[in-house]
Image (cartoon, rainbow, N blue to C red):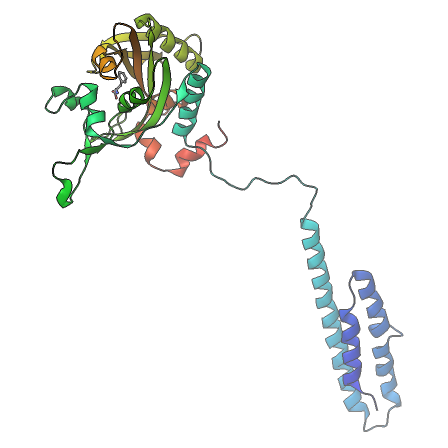
Length: 335
Ligand code: PHE
């Protein structure tokens, strides 16, 4: 009697132990080879009693093909796990996963901040939601004054019952309120910049967005004149745009400076205004508790998106806040 089931169990157990191709070959020789165990059974069929032959012969043949199939499946598994092991090459340098990248306005803001820091400025920030008093009144722009029309304003509604009579708030239209806040807390000499987001109730076009980034500057000390303003801003612009950049100052009006000006840089045959500036109004110095005969200073407010447009050749300011990854990906890897 040949116990085919016991034979199959033994063959499969030893096949499962074959951990590589060499031992798989050994197994094949031992079971299916010319002198293999199953081959011996098949050969022995002819010596069996006639009534036993068909059962054992058919069973042994079925077992042979079952074991051949099992062996080739096992071989496939061995190859697959070898390939897995090879694909992890621990000596390779790490691959950077896609992490996203800095926004072009952030890149530009950081470059401008770095440049001002190198020139000895401190950097502070102020609130985006600002009191009417700081955004307007204390910058010499009282309610009803036509100069308020220079800044189209997004007011923050207070719908509560106690809203009546409370100080009004708005999304700051510029970073200039930080001039007042800083002067409340610090004494001269002052040399500070204030980067931040500003908001205007404005229809958008290629050069105007309702949200924009400004960098405010404030310098207060004894004996400062318009020459210091010009010298500082011209030195700054040359550091950012290169020594050959052409600049021009033109008269402009802002209620909190006297005189006021705008600074343009020459770019591809055109003048582009990148900031407003001027000598801090003596009343603002006096309101801060300082003697305007002794202390003078200058201030400026720079449009960061404008500078980013120049720097990267962006034709439409609205690209910056559309969140179109095809636009944003162009700045990957920049610093
Ligand atoms: N705050 C002004 C604006 O938003 C710019 C400015 C700042 C002008 C400081 C003069 C001095 O247009």
